[in-house]
Image 1 (cartoon, rainbow, N blue to C red):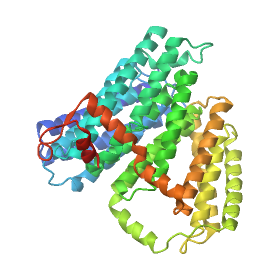
Image 2: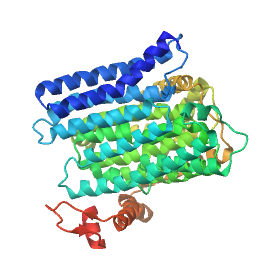
Image 3: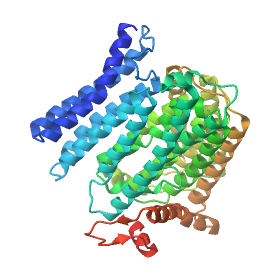
Image 4: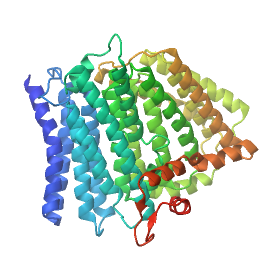
Length: 521
């Protein structure tokens, strides 16, 4: 092991320990001095987490680590991302939660959550990853119940608690099977043995269980409702949840990609569930007015798209998507207070439906821009992601070109070219970081995702540009309610484990249908 590898391993171990130290300082002595010391420690942890990535990229680095430490580049990138977001949340919370009676509870639980996340990201041992996964859920439950007297938050935390146990049991079953089949607890040793010539029934079961754990962690349908209802928690908690915790399901799939992607049932389970979630969540988002609820639906849809990318074997694209979405969603939540003003400004220039000429011109520009991206990336298959890019650019250019204020379509076309070029560069960079971990899949998943893109495009055009048609109205009603999937999940969870709501609002145990509807409304 070189000196660079040794230093990187030490810094990896130090990251969760620093978060734990900061939590202990505030827990023992919650004074202003202790707060400043803990913030300094969090900043230091963020710096060394970024240093881990830099050390991994040095020419003299071989990728070797101490025993039980993960050599995964994806884990190192995620560790730096979490460290960066942790620093931002610490300083944002100074004024945002000033005078909050439960401020100590927030600081300690937040730091313990960061400790747990960092532990999962640096570990190469199946049991340590599982224990860290459970710890993340338990710490998150403490954050989601920050206002314990709010029934809506209590209901969301209750559902999340039950869903998390199902995910953990699934992950436990998968890890036990992998340990029995491969005779080791080391994740890197297990992954190094793939692909296998044939996959036995036991490994198919392990792959499906891993997929179930990832789907639940990413709040996919029908386990998504809690994500929409926890918007009552303080904004920094929402930012952490959407930027650094929900996406851990995607990290799990990237980490174990060679294991589960060889299993057809696991791959199609992710494709089917994530596809339904992407369409419903993306279209439901447009039906919402509340800023934080709209962002929650957006996260649900973005996680679905990231899971689809994993199912197509595009792990470098999924990693890029994960990092970009985390930064964007953290910014969106922390700046949510200024959204109403931006909305009022946009209302001064209401968008008109694009003309046929605008659609044709935009589609032509989209095809040209996408062709440039294909040339820069050097990869044409699978085709469905490029189809998605064409559809997205077409809609953006056509609709932006139809507004009164921003009518310069050429400007947006040039901007799109710049963005797509940057995307191609970043995607190739992510591929280099992962060692070109792209895995080729069959044509079936590609065709399925292509149909998904066309469905999403048709739904958007119908709801946006033909909102008064009978079909659009009926579809809008169903989308606004999320097709009542969350109501079904709420009934089921409360039937399994009834919830006693805060006495301030509900003095009795809620288990009946009418009470559930009142609590969910």
